[in-house]
Length: 316
Image (cartoon, rainbow, N blue to C red; front, top):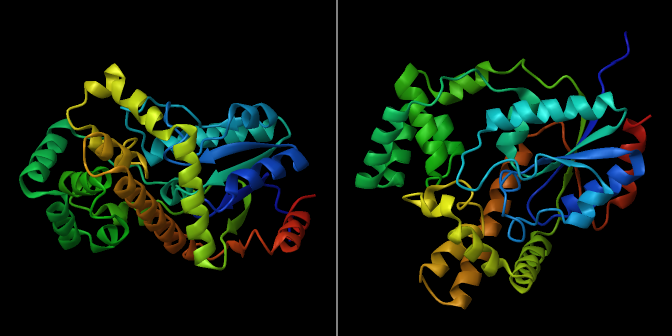
């Protein structure tokens, strides 16, 4: 049997606050790697503290890719991410370095590792119609409409995720074919790398919840609300009619901060809402990760020796 000559890559996956960033930095320094962020919040300029973006010092230690590639009032699709990430991976491999994918955005991982179908481009008029429907009926009603025509997509898309609901309805209305079918047909466009998938996740869910709360409190101490004030003051953000519909503002923590600065609730309620939303995000991430049947799971607090063994067996 011929040897698999594909270049190697490591995917460090896991729920938010599980320690992916620190571990990715360590692996990159040990094995001569560069990190490709797989995170839908880190692509945005200005989302630093609340998105736990790698610091300037961390980026100086290890090259990072796909950070700060869009302004916060711009959209950024999974297809765009996959295209730009593939370019980054090819460049890293051509330099004889080890690509390390690190993040928790399942759709980005799927788009990059498995490929996305060549779905129709956005249709401005149809999007405006769907937005008008949402304003009249609410996004949960449109999510219910999506469930009627594409139950598989509706099961994956949260009822409060307007961007993905809109895109799924748009694709169906443009083509008559559910977006989930387009995505199934994309299989076979896989990334031409041999990828070791490592999932970091505390075995005890209370440990993860405690990490989430501690990290959010640290973000507040570091000036998270000041960061959101600065985002709100940007001319590009002020030009947006409904900023809460922007993907950047819907990032966990940012939406709750935005609403708090709009006068919704007190500081204690804001903190509780943000931590609860982050826990829900972690739950969704874990649900998606359980479907990655070729991924290996590790509790970073107790499985360090097993993690090192997995790396040693995979890397030459």
